[in-house]
Image (tube, rainbow, N blue to C red):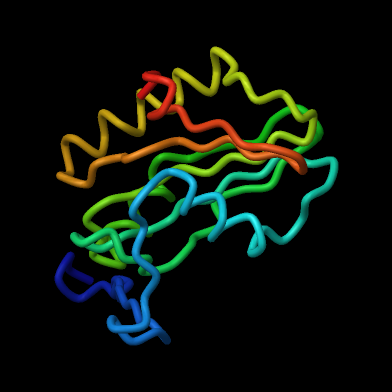
Length: 149
């Protein structure tokens, strides 16, 4: 059997949305993100979790992608999964969202390193990271508003 006779897997990429562009929520400020995302968050509990908000060029919400759910003090954030979703949905901007069950609003060193890594990847792919928001059951913290992005 030659190389060209072997079977290979076909990669299919698709994205569909259920919300008409005219009905998509537009993010105009940092508080909009919290007000939009908090009611959608599936588990405000004892486990850390991470998602991204996918935005159009006009900052209309294309969707939310749940990246990971971890333990009480951490979750795995895979940059490849973030950019796979962003590219698949043709997002122009993304916002990182991170749930801290401890209620601690200050980003850890790990949070900061991960944010820089994803921000750098976004620059390379022309998909800016507009913010990284840490939420808890009582409050939220916006890295961009605090000059940490």
